[in-house]
Length: 196
Image 1 (cartoon, rainbow, N blue to C red):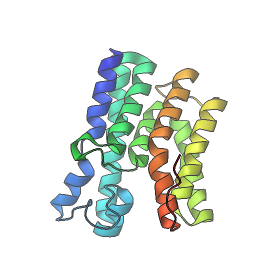
Image 2: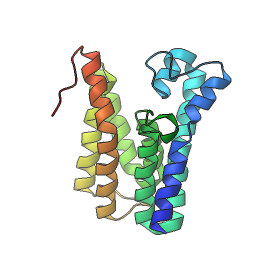
Image 3: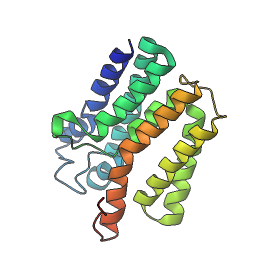
């Protein structure tokens, strides 16, 4: 059933819902603004109503993936489905592995997998954006905080209540998202992304 949890999480995460919502309003998120099919670009190109719709649907997708994974494989299934949903969102198989940056869907996974951590991380990214004035570095700071919370591990209350699976989920999701946020940080700073 663990394999089924991975597959379900991946399929849920791969659904290009932001693209669908934007196209209903005559907007192609992949060819306008930053080209990213996410909440920020939806806000810039379609306004707050489109951004809110994209955010709510991405959060719901993440939550649904975790619920399904938990049904299929308990805490392990939930953690693996969460990670698979983030993977499919960031590297979307329907768009030649070009996807979003994964924050919204990951937030949805945390809402049911580890809600207390989500509250902390929302505060971290909010503070990071306020202090750093840029979303890329704030996102990287938040991903580091996510892994640190999993290592510390006293926060509970969700469907993933085993420290080992919390750590696997945190490391997996953060590793999947970090390259895009790092590239965004360097691009906005006007520098090339360092190699090797």
